[in-house]
Length: 113
Image (cartoon, rainbow, N blue to C red; front, side, top):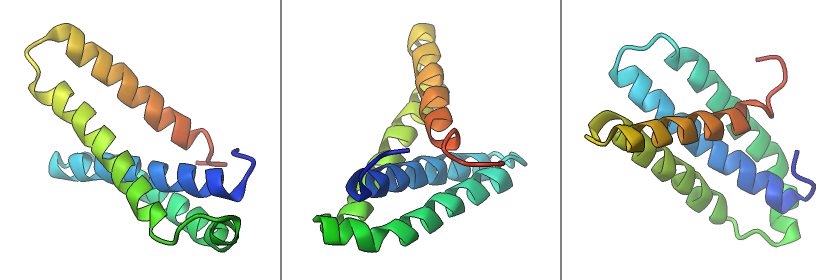
């Protein structure tokens, strides 16, 4: 778990974005895992909401979490795009590994899910 309110807000926002993008892809593919992914995203949104007042008093601009969330969404969307549309098997493999690691980095912070 990140030590400062600033880093907590950043991590929670990025993870929320990553999971939101993954859930959107899962929903588009009628993947039943989307429910679990959305629940995980909601947990990160809740943790962000709880830590945001301390983060703002620590110096985080109030609109920064939205930028961080968008960053998490974008990086995940790019990886998903590479997995789905690349003709280069190595690129697909690297994107899959990166996606799995980034999602695991987030879900590893959640207790009991």
